[in-house]
Image 1 (cartoon, rainbow, N blue to C red):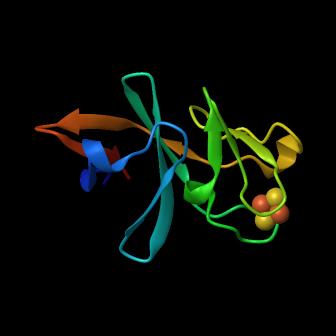
Image 2 (tube, protein in one colour):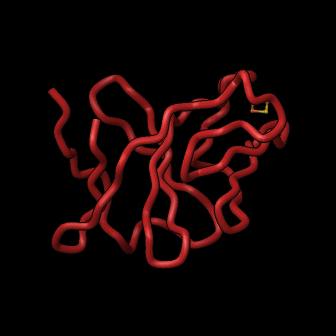
Image 3 (cartoon, rainbow, N blue to C red):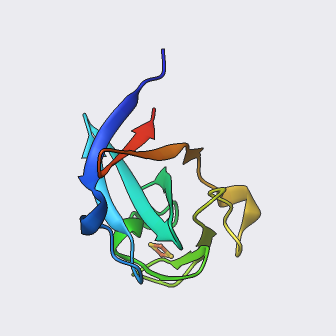
Length: 101
Ligand code: FES
């Protein structure tokens, strides 16, 4: 059963980068685009870099290691579509970012 997990304070998520977070033994990357928050799998499928440390440009994040681009809203890999990631619904409750896992 899916449930929302609190992963960060709103103020912790930078506007120009992601934020790596962990729930249990799973890694996720949180992003802020405008006033909205998004979550995708946190590990790059190329060589395992933390996507939450990547720089963003609107809805895109660039892997910090080799620069593959991902859409933070959908998890789509823009360089290699067969390497796309899962995206997870995110919401804000009382100043906290929550993701549905
Ligand atoms: S580890 Fe992400 S592009 Fe290589």
